Length: 316
Image: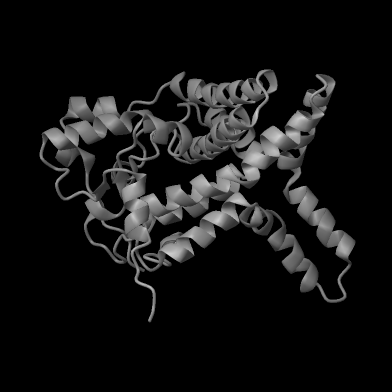
């Protein structure tokens, strides 16, 4: 099994630079989790106070992007980056980031670290995400429509259960359903808590309109855009660690609606996977000063990545 090639940070940075880049923080991760929830609450409040189609669309996009933000912060916790105390790190990642979006840090961590170990090699479990690209523009638009209409959400949330039901044969369907409920227990508890809290404020409808709808529409779309930007069109079995992933320059709007919490610095993340995400921009600047970014895989923005990812010509 081919392990992805690595670089030693000490070969690229001075001891002082690496100490600064690798330093953990006891408050930055907590602040980022709090920020994600603050944006979600503020976006929801915007529509509640000023209800109109424009504020609703904006709220859905902001909340869906911060749901992705929670997933990104769960990813940060998988690397131990949210807090230097591993117990606090894992609690934050599991209960304030993963559970609300239906994920599991405990299950995600071994899967994701395998992705890092075999990045872009045949054993990389994420290789399937980038395999379809480049695709045609029509194919990409079909994927976008499926995301925005909730089809991707339904398939991901209920597809496994329906598949188990169809293949159960004579097995009791109730046991299968109960097992799925138990597996999704933290997610269901979070949603029940949100529904109860909003109902107590006379806003029961906000659970569906301002939590589930963003999760079923914008969240899947920006998750797809993130996956495309990070590894689509990256060569399989790539030997150069500077080209195992792509860094995408993101402007303010893209950071707000597509790429929160420095997720766009993905090449740097693969190079230095235990560097806290808030230090990745600094890592990029230091590499740039040393003339080491010329061979790095980068893109000027998300539209440029999508254009390249949908450049496959239509078959005659």
